[in-house]
Length: 87
Image 1 (cartoon, helix red, strand yellow):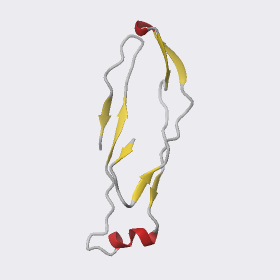
Image 2 (cartoon, one colour):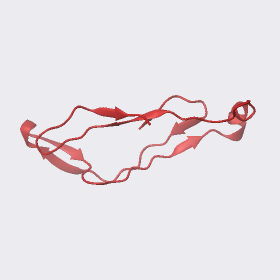
Image 3 (cartoon, one colour):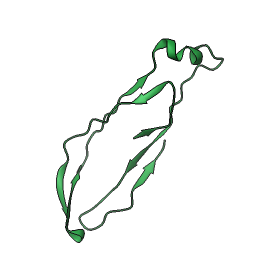
Image 4 (cartoon, one colour):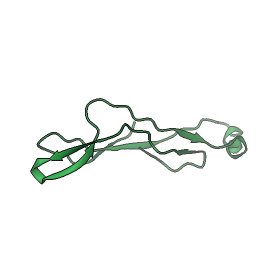
């Protein structure tokens, strides 16, 4: 996950399950994969109150975070091109 630059927020490193090795036979390559369903957690750290004060004192004190999730999906026979999705 990538967060668009913001002076008020940043991302911590993602917490992922341990990947398992997978041999992609068409390329004779072993890669780490996350198979089946899994959960990824990633904390968003907000700025301290003093740092976020200009936003809080504005006429519209909402903080909108934008970003993108990048991924690649593979099966036993094909790896699709990397993709991304933004909400």
